[in-house]
Amino acid sequence: MTYDIHIIGGGLAGSEAAWQLAEAGLKIRLSEMRGSGEMTPAHHTDGLAELVCSNSFRSDDANNNAVGLLHAEMRALGSVIMTAADAHKVPAGSALAVDRDNFSAAVTERLLAHPNIEIVRERVDGLPSSGSTIVATGPLTAVRLAESIGAATGSDALAFFDAIAPIVHRDSIDMDICWMASRWDKGETKDYINCPMTKEQYQAFVEGLLAGEKTSFREWEQNTPYFEGCMPVEVMAERGPETLRFGPMKPVGLDNPRTGRWPYAVVQLRQDNALGTLWNMVGFQTKLKHAEQVRLFRSIPGLENAEFARLGGLHRNTFINSPKLLDGTLRLKKAPHIRFAGQITGCEGYVESAAVGLLAGRFAAAEALGSDIAPPPPTTALGALLGHITGGADADIYQPMNVNFGLFPPVEQIKKKADRKAAYTSRAREDLRAWQAAL
Image (cartoon, rainbow, N blue to C red; front, side, top):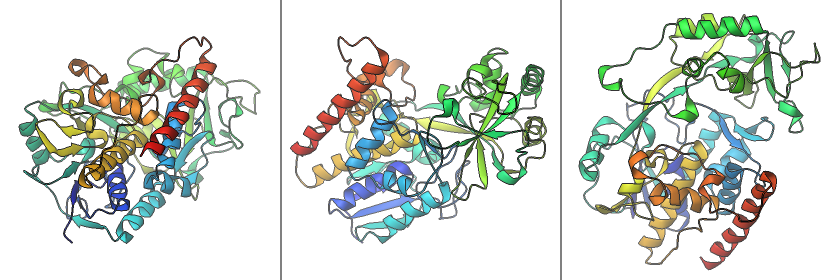
């Protein structure tokens, strides 16, 4: 197939960008190195849009949450990622979580079936010198391409570590100890498995985390920082003995039906596949060695006989200094035929990555078709995220960021926090409709 746009990377952002461009009538070459004999340190399949460290798209509340609002905006713009997520969701309270295998298979199937998309299993080692291109290689960009990006931008890429949480087989969890509930009973169903801990059990667990043998770093990795939103559980424990009780092991709002009280601490597991056979240890991303993980996590009440479908891990993420390097439509200032999309731009999270892919696709389509497209208003979730990436953030201290209401222009004269959230989402919906009408 001859093509109009070349997309490098078949993750969430690349898949979404390809879909948006193909739906606009443009021919797309989508290059994905997985399936060509290459693999990343974190992926396990060659499926497009494979989810790695979690199966959660986080809150689906479009009225009170910025990421839920982003979900709604992407649905309104025909997102293939949100369509697949909605079709393969699993119970997760007020959050949107998916069966990761079926989700990836659905995205792959839709892109393979599209007559305007050619998927090529190949590794791309350098930025093209010409031709409209979208780079969506994500935080695990291959070394040679990363070096090519560095040479083209004249700026060192930033980097941080990202950690993966373990997954447990459901039938190995002792439900005589654990119980099903959502915090404060939110959602129509009880979607989380809760493992209770006494004070003594919690303290022993924290001591075990601190003493456990960890993955050692290579010399070139020594000064690479962690991203705060995906901190290894043992690194959180190093910040103080009570830190985990105010983070992933928070017991607030979880009544143990056997005692009628909140436990001292709780380990929660969230359903990871549609069959309900696999459950993800929420917030338990880790760099402990595998033997240590098995020993320590089996000390958690209810997980004494846990069988693990996947143990935790650690990988190095890379992203560019987007506020310095990209223009308002995600083009590389020094080489405007190239756009960047997804986590390599420094957005953080599955939904945010796909959202930036959606925008890159729409900007590239408008350019290829000779039409103008204004960026979405900064009052929308899409516009707020784009604005942060392309200039709203301080380039000198740029770090990965999830979408949040702090990126939106403030709503004046509303003091109550709950009312402010409703005001943000109401304004965003109205402004998105106006932007769509103008398109």
